[in-house]
Length: 33
Image 1 (cartoon, helix red, strand yellow):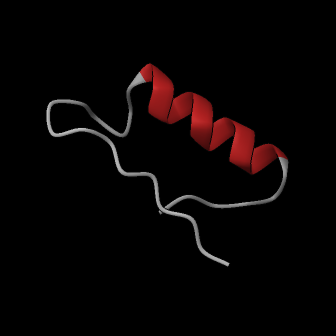
Image 2 (image 1 turned 180 degrees about the vertical axis):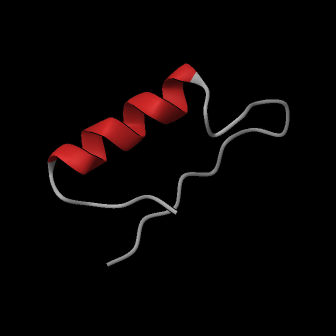
């Protein structure tokens, strides 16, 4: 299964929230696109 993180128009996928979510998914072996 693929997961996609949709960040807001004025935000970046490298924002704190984006990085935090990516780390949590990585801990369970999932990759965000």
